[in-house]
Image (cartoon, rainbow, N blue to C red; front, side, top):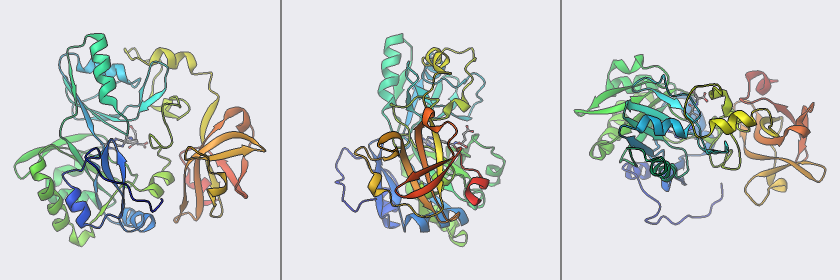
Length: 374
Ligand code: THG
């Protein structure tokens, strides 16, 4: 991360938690859905170890919701994703990548069913509300599509269950992965789900009553002192070790669902009305690129292979055959980990690649314990 300052203007939105985040000593932000998203508190590595050992409170307000409401809401949301939503339960979330009619990835949100005629699309970083409004208009659907004042707060880490039980009650322990409940804080019911952008476990509280944002933050901190609760944020080291792709960094509109490995969540034979499914069916066996992991035994200095669009070239002689979009030193495994999108023709039969003078082992994603410990 560079040390350049970024001006925070009216076009970069603050959140109901920003004051607390500042008081907690945030050191860097990124901008996500035109809103501040904390990026570092102490250091990437210190934040990482703390997340893996204790419990953190994350201001992930920037995971904006698009609300779809009305008689045609289920139809519109299904049109936007090739994932089959027909059996989704109330208060269940589903990871539901969204694609255009050519199968390109527009976002990879979690879709939440609040009622048959009321859905939230919990966004990664792209302007899906406009697309949803355009589709609704074009198809003549009877729906409203808007961004409600809802600000997710994540509680992540191995002690998240204990902290959440103190604040919301013991019932939280019975919530299964990607399921949710309406639970009261200060007499107001909030949607609470077992989810979050880490593999350390935890919950997300969708804060729709901003007058309770700071009281909720303060309660989590006062109840969590002995659990060593701290402010945190999505952590690059943790998510790369977990092999989680980040929309806007690893995947963009230039990649299709298959290239990102997101077809694992899709049934191409599903009997649903989805804008992208016809194209996805037709292109399934015609893919030229794929994502792989690369594991290096020593730290790699990527500066010599940096390209102009913020990635790092994978070269075969002079020929660019792929691009590393994310990489980190893993303090746990003592390996340098990279995620790269590469040409399948180049990859065939290949198990090693040299980048910036270091030999790396090509592995499947997500990284397995075997590939990290070997
Ligand atoms: N929480 C909420 N909104 C979000 C995110 C979140 N919006 C943006 C971004 N994160 C959406 N992307 C993801 C990507 C992966 C997961 C969640 C959100 C995830 N995946 C699990 C996995 O890969 O193992 C499980 C997916 C599944 O089984 O369905 O958790 O974090 N509110």
